[in-house]
Length: 93
Length: 189
Image (cartoon, rainbow over all chains, first blue to last red; front, top):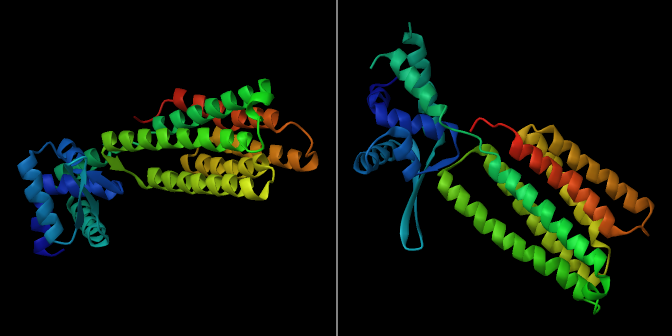
């Protein structure tokens, strides 16, 4: 596993976000906040980092003048998550 | 955090995903009741519904269309409240949207071509219910869908029977009863 991926997913908030997105099709920003127990600002930073790494896609739209952000995992994100999980399993116990 | 803690974190996060089947059960109950009430009104007051050549078609297209608009808005609202979509819920949403378009196409075509709509819609409904039942692994819904095929077959054998009664029995067995059973079932919510 490369160092970049290790560094990216070593952050618990990013790991929680990617783990949740791995099990669903898409999730709202609000749901990601709830799942990762992180603040709005922190989530914004972490999803941006995951997007820059090509692991997730961020969609922004407006609903009744309210901004709605939703995220979905990419195929690269799925692959990275699987590699990271296998890496953890190999070190477990 | 060591690797064991990280694996625990991943498992805990993934376990927060729940397949919420309550909205689906509400949809089934709503349509089961809606079609039954419409059929009963038509059965009891045929002269009122069949006043003109097209009044029955308007009744059977207009009211379900209003029901569709209401349920679509309700489903969008519930989806936003839930905040995420799983592959299963997306699949179910797509097949029911396709059913909606199919129903609309059959209903609108019947205005011009004047054919019996009930057997075609029951067949389409049977297909969608069977698929939904198999996707969510809920036998009463799968069986309900298959029962509709029997009714369609029955209508083809004897086209003179009352479609309203066939409709009522069909939607009760295919939508209403499985919907109630699904709403009472304990999910992993």
